[in-house]
Structure formats: C-alpha cells, structure tokens
Length: 156
Length: 232
Image (tube, rainbow over all chains, first blue to last red; front, top):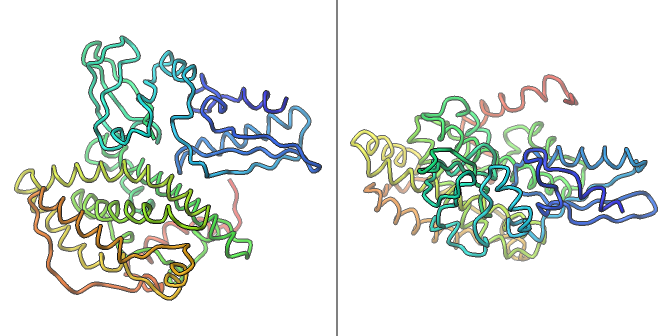
C-alpha cells in the first residue's frame, strides 16, 4: 500500500511521470522501527534527487508514518532502459523526446545514435544543438521541419 | 574539477558551452558527493561528504594537481578537461572490477557520464586543434603548459599499493598506458604536437599541491568556515 502511495510521486522536473515510471523508486520495507524506502539515483549530480527524498518523507508523514529511512542503492546502476514504454509515451506527449533505443547499444554513447523524432510534428529530420541541455539528463535538439526546439532524454 | 568548471557559469563563450561546462561540473560534483560520502563511512569518524569537502585544509586534499589548475582561456579549459576525461574514462573502466561493491557501482555509473564528457571535449579538441591558426596556437600552448601535471595522475603510494593488493583499487600503470595511447591518437588527429617534456610535477598523493588549491578552497570553503554548522 505504501508502495502504491509513493509510486504516485511525480518527478519534480518532469511532472507527467512518476518516480516509479523512472525506476528511481526501487523498494519499500516495513520493519519494527518504521519504513525503509530504497531509491536509485539517476545522474550523479541530479539535484532533483534531494527534492524527491523530501517528497517521499512528507508524503509518508501525511499518511502518519514518521519514522522513514531512505536508502540509496547504487547497484544495479540506473539506466534509461528502466523507463517503461508508457512512461516514454508520456514524455513524448509532454514535449520531451524519450530515450531512443536500449542503452546497451553502445552506439548511443559513441555518437552513432540516429536522431530522435520531433515530439511536436513527428519528423525524423532533426539535428542536435548541444549534448547538454536544461538538465543533466537532457540534450537540446532542433526540428528542421517544424523549426521547434525540443529536449531529448539521453540514453544512459 | 567541478568547482573549477562552475567558475565558467555565466561566462561561457556561447550559451550552449556555458551549459555544457556547468552540466559536466554538476556530474563531477555529484560523483564527488557520492565518493566522499562513502569515504566518510569507511573512515568511521562520522564525517559527512560536506565535512570532508568544506572543512579539510589543503594538505589533506588528495585531488590530482591537474584538477586545481586555473581555467585560463577556453582552449585551456577544454585541454585540461580533455586530459582529465580520458583519465577518468580509463580509471573508472578499471575500477568497475573492484571487489568493493560500492566503488564498483559508482564506477559503472560515473563511467557512463564521463563517456559523454569525453565525447564533448574530444570534439572540441578536434575543432580547436584543426581550426584556425589562433585556436590551434591556443590549444597547443595549453597542452604544453598542462603536460607537466599529467605524470601526477598516475602516481601511486603505499595506500594505493595496499588497495591494489586487496583487489579494491586499480593499477594506475595500466591506466597510464591506455591514457597515453588515447591522448596521442587524438592529438595527432587534431594536428597537435605531443609534448616531449620529461619533467613532471608530483605530490598530490602526499597532499602537496600547487599554489592554486589554496585560492580555490578559500572560495569554496568560505561559507562553511565563516558560519560553522550553517544550514539552508
């Protein structure tokens, strides 16, 4: 039940998807002292992780659970492969191009990935403006057909 | 390194580079946070990552000399970052095999981020080296000036030797070989000369730093030291 409540916490930066969708929320355990929530961080320096931790604590507080331990689990390492297909569709509708292919394909890290489709008009005629976008997880692209810029959620 | 790159915030040559450098800085600060947090736990004296970052004096810092060099012009920053990214890439690649679970996981994670950094700085090295006469001169000068700090990247002391024996840490001689090959190859592609200088600065393993670290820490630690135990 707690898992269900926590599964609805939205990502602070991209509110259309939840921390469960992203694969950040890993596990919930109840023990004699209270509740232990296990999370896996996305990017090393992601500032949203702190906001997510605070949100977990306050959400549980609202449900009367005060004693919360948040455990950060680094292994297995977070990867965009954990983002569900439904979540990727939500990203696209929100205007962010979802990670294109399985990150196990090293091609994406070697710069050989094909360009993502424009989330506004669907065209494949897009180009990268910068590898680094508004947040650590995104790159900045431009659509050469509808001329709109868009963020791309990088494969990692 | 994260601290140095953050100094570019608002001063980048173009907006996309400002963002790129600060994004890289963010990744590095994040990696440092995780590593220092773990170091604090292993030390067992109750130190948090903030204590270790903001309250240690210069002699207790063990960062490589390359990371504390000033930013200089854009070519200097890119050259410094490139040499560092190649280092981190092979370092983390090796450290993934550590018997220590936390170090292995952190390495796997950081390697993915560093791969993006390396791609970025490699592309810039090619653009600057194989660019205009001015960009070529600036980046060549940068490489020449930074070269004497690259030996220090691979120095190992008794602690490193012990950790290597226990399978926790890695043999930096191996990393050095890969680093040298990779750097030589890229420099050649960028039409840059590989420096032949043999004198290398050293000392980071023993906490002996260049004069730059003092100034960097003065700025970085100012707030914590002026208002001890301050909280946001």
